[in-house]
Length: 447
Image (cartoon, rainbow, N blue to C red; front, side, top):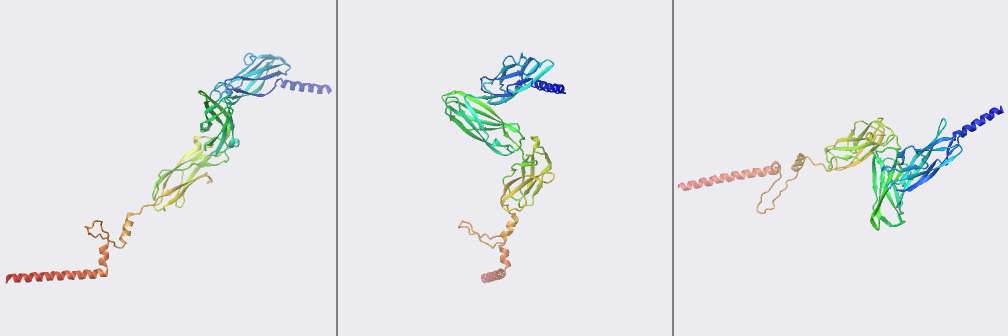
């Protein structure tokens, strides 16, 4: 029984020893290096196997992991031809390898991380392990530091956010005409949001901090986005000695969506500027799904306060993860009533799910001008007015202008009838006298 226990202990010891056959003095490392320069670190590999390693090689798992977004490649090399021929590593021995990195002159500043695979061949198989290498490219002329400000927490579609960029002059001489440009990479349907500072000067060893504000698009994917910063300037004493450095800050803008079902309705546009009674116009707006769920059979409803207007759109679907399918343009044709007061009216548009739950809203005010009166009504009002006389400004013209309806009103009154009867009799009397006088003169002539 004791022999059996001893054998089992030996087997466990050998198994543990074999499983830890190849060991590293560290599993990861960060190398800081200036643009266009070379820097290095060391890695010690130990063979803890009972077997000899006939060949040990180092290789980069993905060479593109050391390439920036400007296609600038950091060269990574190993001493002792570790990446080509390799080396022999006897059991119980170690080998220290130097890993060197060389960014390009225009290499973007910031960190790039990749994996290095160590493969050790032995009789009957091989052993492998991974070493993580981070290269932090820096510039010897300026130091760029980002203060994430509002970005230290998740932000939502449509939120406003602020961050700061601090520039320190490490050149050893004065710099001028410095300008910072920052890009929120790929956040706007694959396009960047770009922000610029005004130009400023920096004395040697001085620093300057600039704030940048931006709005997160409503139509945005739920993920983390990089901030790319470019700093350009020139030597204050020699304008031909200019510089440009770019630094990438990884995963700074973390966009998250809070609600399962939520629709953002953009501000509506009105096709007609001047509105009055009976006006017809179009109301156009964009609906965007800013929730985490796909929405089927949604619709919008438009109403105008103080009227009976209520218009429902056709139903449509909004995906949650595809840019083009996440938004929909909606158009309403609206006709105002024939009678409206001159004032402002609120257009209200609500977004509904297929179960009639409200998941979005927007309001817009419109101004209705004074409605014009009907011509026939104006004429009727004028005929009911008391008669008034109007004269021209010409003193030689004494024509009297009587408003329409004067004769009818005058002769329909009792006084008018009496005066008309009297004038008629008077005219008849004048005619009779005229004929008597004429007859008398004729007789006198004959005699």
